[in-house]
Image (cartoon, rainbow, N blue to C red; front, side, top):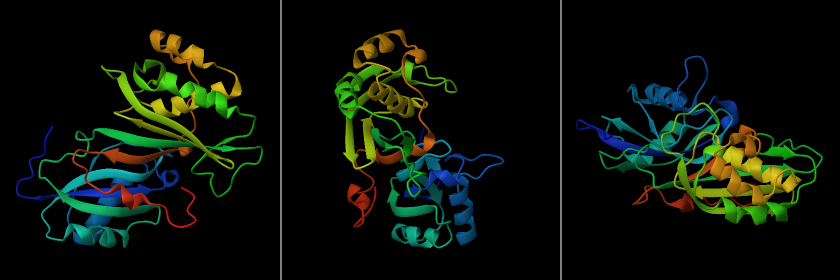
Length: 269
């Protein structure tokens, strides 16, 4: 699939949003979506209708620090002015971090070479308040070293049918996870997943599988059989959406500089 720009300019957006406020990225008839909110804001700002193409169609409750989308425009506004202009009319739960004019045939949906997500668990008996929309609360004991020991078995190229929920038809269920890591900072445990692409709910199930391993409900030695059988029942729960965040989308050549995501002093994530 390629764009027919028809003489129009192609603008890529790097967007951060709080997924707890929206019913996912993609337009829905009777619910607020991130896509529709940005499109409506552009129309309000410029009087021009546009349609965003998306690198990721995140589910309701899933947030993003670096979602990439693109749209065609007939307007002459410089790309570097788009973030400030759009942010002046967008709700506070959405922020355009950067914009860039890209090749007329660039398509943010089909061009990515990979994506990075984080899944965040909040550990301990006391549930969080400030982090409730960005983490999944895990009140019971958790053996994090058991979870870390299972990471190599999940890394690499596998048929991830056993970590895909119903609701998506995929002819090819083979995916490659390039890197997996777990980092603990106090009560916050962050799972970072780098891969070439992901199936429906795959990362949330992967996070749930690691949770079960940390709770002693599964062993890392169970994973080869789960992959071989392609049986969803052999893996962990689908973790809540709010713990998941899209962290980066890879393109070759890069569209945006990852330094844009450097946290502010004292930042949580």
